[in-house]
Length: 196
Image (cartoon, rainbow, N blue to C red; front, side, top):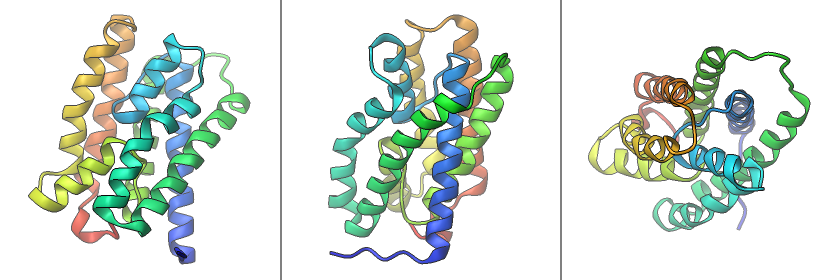
């Protein structure tokens, strides 16, 4: 099966992958987390001897199967490409984009904004960053509930688990970043106007 992409889709997905990967760099450098699959992978990377990239990919595999079954091969293959690229690019950027000092508030704001912009670009080009975003898009299609609102509720569960690993200030900054991400999606993305 061949999945063709226009130059428009390629540039949009590339932008989304770069911005989402950069968000991981900001968050990881400040010891913060986010929601969804990325948040779970970041949290686990702090307590296990594995990097974000491999964990992000492994956690996302069941959701990639769901994407194939519920959204079809075009969406699923694009999503697989996005997940693999974020897994690898976030690791690469993390090794070459280094900070002598990074204020956690700045990391939360920039990480949340980069993530929001990246996810919107990915959604608009008929793909997902994997994980719960796939469920969010499916729910928005079926019920009209905004994907951002669904993601925010899932984030609450991730942050509850993070409370056992992060300091209260790290948790607060992480929450701020996740709110910025999800509000960007709620305010700037409508599934009816996109390719998803």
